[in-house]
Length: 170
Length: 153
Image (cartoon, rainbow over all chains, first blue to last red; front, side):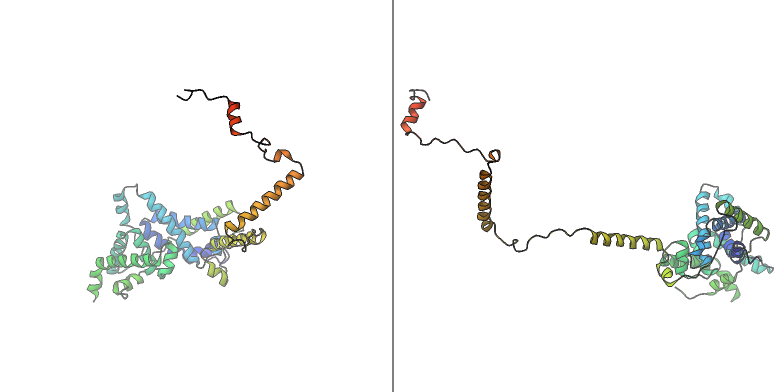
């Protein structure tokens, strides 16, 4: 949309992926919106963050992840039941016209939301960003082995929860 | 790690939800405002520079590597700038104390003689005042007086 403005270029290139990740982490669109804006505010204040980086997207995900973790820490004192109620309306996936597909996405979002945040982060970056465990480890500041084990635990839970969707197809 | 199964493949195909388009202008204007408060207007340069092989090798902690290199440079500079300490004479290391003792005594005696020649009396130890000749033992007893009977009783 805007080839001149580097911020706009960054937004157009990464906003959707970041929003999906933040929505997956926060499960509340308004929180995801606030964190998305804060991510770009930090980038605007410190554009040199990208100058020394290998991957523009990895830096943005790292900023977004740290912001999401800060929000998680703050939210621990909030009423969890209210969060769960709001989370039912928050699906990080695009809406689908097909009712079956929409139901699958709804349940997949719920299953994803029930994962612990650290497993959810790894699963999201692996499945929808296609990062390697080494890249995930750099983004989330942990070891590749930890990233791999968190992914394994997370995907096992998703598989158990969504098994009927796969079995019904076969 | 198990091979990718159907559920992974199906989840991977799910498209992520896009942020509402009306957010774009709000977020970008807020980011530009934040940028202008911390920097000169128009100075925001988000550039993707191609890293040199050295940068890639030192990533992700070039600062730590630079500090380590600086410490090594300081240590090397100190090593070459400070005088080397005098080493002990290896020839004297194996000499026994009994062999060195007469040498030390002789040196001491020469020093005393030299000081005496230079007439530095306050540095010399006081010589005991010995009489030219001791009187006979009986005379000495007499000088002290006769022993009284029952004195030690």
